[in-house]
Picture 1 (spheres, rainbow, N blue to C red):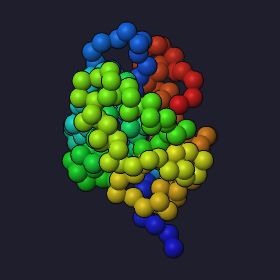
Picture 2 (cartoon, one colour; picture 1 turned 60 degrees about the vertical axis):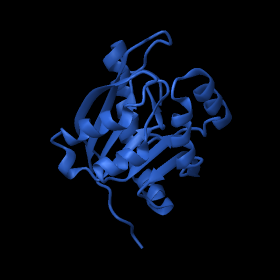
Picture 3 (cartoon, rainbow, N blue to C red; picture 1 turned 180 degrees about the horizontal axis):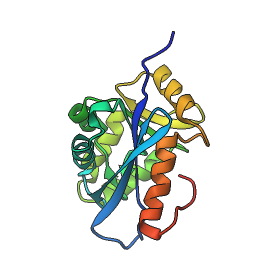
Picture 4 (cartoon, helix red, strand yellow; picture 1 turned 135 degrees about the horizontal axis):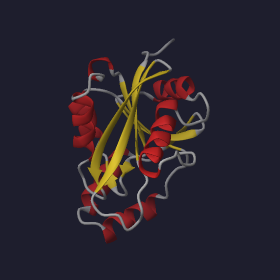
Length: 189
């Protein structure tokens, strides 16, 4: 049985920044209509802040692509250092499924320690991560999901993994974000 088709996707990644950086961090969204790059969104979030879900939702809603979007992909649940994306809030604001993708499963104990010991609001950020549950292996990557079944996540990954295991919207967002800051794209996501 075929699951719902997710042909219009927006994939987000953050731009690189030096460890000493303070202030805003660029984020890039690549907009795909089926497997064609259809547009690019650029915004900012606060490094180590807690504004990622609101900023992503605003960026998507204000774009000409919002009415056609069917799925949001994120390159990890944190952006701009430890700016944790409240994916439940993002899902609620946009009424779209959210698929979080990572090449490897993160060391959750290390993430928890870093959040709770080194960042203001770290316990609240950890609560968001913990409520989403552990990342699950699907189609050669690790995912977390809101508004999607595991079979749908698997089908999405197989459809969008064109040049690597990382879905094309995320792969291209990563390349564009790197070029935006450094003048050229950086290594794989």
